[in-house]
Length: 135
Image 1: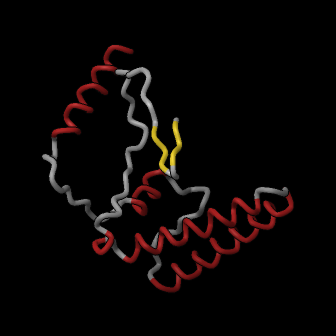
Image 2 (image 1 turned 180 degrees about the vertical axis):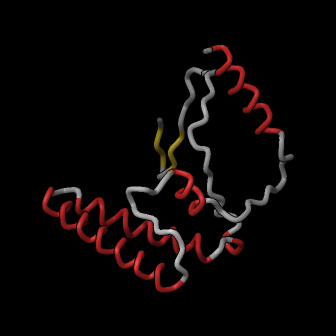
Image 3 (image 1 turned 90 degrees about the horizontal axis):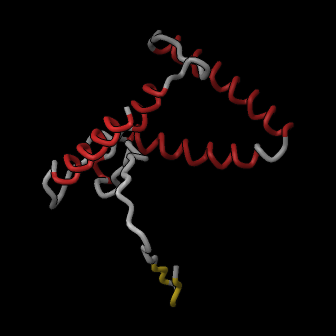
């Protein structure tokens, strides 16, 4: 890695053909106007809660205070849901990965300039072949 005048360049010494998918959820910030207010609100809440959790994780007593605050917030949210719509109640212990993915998924991501299946098809083939070889 070389750094000159604030620019950082990386040298690739050895290429690897082992391709693994690390991030299946990629957020597109190019289509910012198309994002729903729900997604923007989620991003804001996530940013603030991350900062609070990072601060509270320093001491065990702060962590306990944060747990109590989370429980109080969940109780208030459940009361609000009962008053407003009567939907099924979701506690933070029962929250699943699918529920979180529903909140994090952008409404749509437009592709610009590249064919839709060019990168995806080659990558999918390599991943499926690699998983078949392991089995």
